[in-house]
Amino acid sequence: MAWFEYRNGVLYAESVSLVRIAEEIGTPVYCYSNAALKANYKEFADAFGHRNILIAYSVKANANQAVITTFSDCGAGADVVSEGELQRALAAGIPGSRIVFSGVGKTQKELKAGLAAQVHQFNLESKAQLESLSEIAANQNVKARVAFRVNPDVDAKTHDKIATGRKADKFGVPIVEARGLYDLAGSLPGIEVVGVDLHIGSQLTDLEPFKDAFSRLAELVNALRRDGHDIRQIDLGGGLGVRYRDEEPPTALSYAGLVDKIFGGFGCQLIFEPGRALVANAGILLSQVIEIKHLSERRFVIIDAAMNDFLRPALYDAWHPIDPVCEAPVDAKREIVDIVGPVCESGDILGRGRAMSFLAPGDLVAIGAAGAYGAVMASNYNTRPLAAEVMVHGGEIAIVCPRLQLDELIGRDRLPQWLGKPTNPFDEHGAT
Ligand code: PLP
Image 1: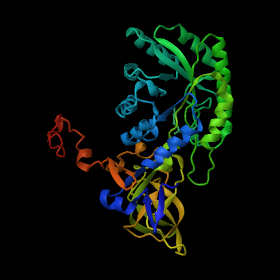
Image 2 (image 1 turned 45 degrees about the vertical axis):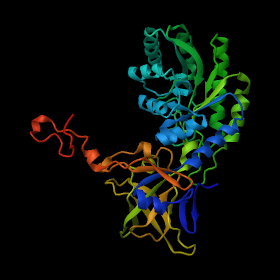
Image 3 (image 1 turned 180 degrees about the horizontal axis):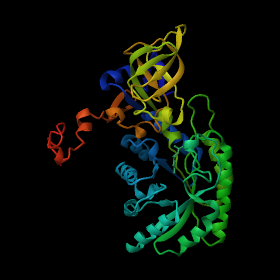
Image 4 (image 1 turned 30 degrees about the vertical axis):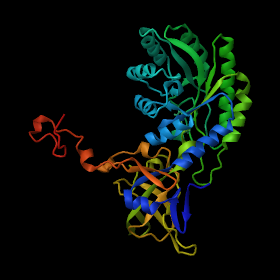
């Protein structure tokens, strides 16, 4: 079932026309399909049947409360990497007992927040993190449940900036040093060793790197058990890829088959941290054409969404489908254009060299598969207010994050007293 499809030549999100969303909410606006989120979750969960698993949705992929709550209602836990994400997950009704706390650099404040929430598992990434956590927990007379995120030195064969399991990456502890760290962990007063963890990267389109990494992790679990550690939770991270263009990522079922083959006999709870696979195709970014600019060599379609709204094309050279909301006739003439935003950066290109039917100012376009690593990575660069976010459910539209207004944005700044001016003319309440 396509959650975004043309009906009578107009692109719909579930039963809501994107033209209506643009009219009622304005552009740029992220639009998520509630049905798509639930279907993606179900597909992942069904692939594992009734096995003892925890699907800890990776909040970083899309942190909107409506998205997290949708997954929470499906029974999901959460994978968080900051105190902010932890608070988001708790606020969405996910109890600490279903939260894993990942993150390469956790502050003392964050470790304390994780302890206060009694998270299911801290995924530790260094000896220093281990020692800090033990000290904080011991002072409170509690024990923190921990796993080490190990770096198996496996190339995920994905974009360089989202590969995380190679020796040179900053993440995890080298798998060859893990046994020593587990022994240390086992001797510390504030620590209870419960599991192992890895996450080798994102947007994996092949099972092979998973297989390599998981096999190394399985060997480690055996060694740790021989060393006397009670390993009962195995966290396999996220990373399952999605189709943006013509990729053929593994299905959830084939991924589950691999996991079963390697870890089926361990009698452990298996934890997964999927992000992209649950949200990418459940969202689009709706934008309006501002202007068409023909220069000698190229044709630019300037739209009102930009790299500050959607960073993936500029940051990762990511390719996303871009389609007109009002479908052109099949025999309509097409031209090759660059679809760009108005931000003052040459890299502000959302789609380069696209064959598009003629677009005119005021036309709407939808950037597809924008539900993951979209709104969460947005910024106010060029003092552009963050885009609004909406969720549709059948024929209903709900604003799940209103557009930030300019006065709110500028009103956050404060003028130092020595400038001798009102604290901030945009802040009607004055400085606080
Ligand atoms: N877990 C960790 C520790 C991550 O860093 C990430 C993302 O990079 C994820 C899970 C989610 O990955 P994905 O969105 O590829 O499933």
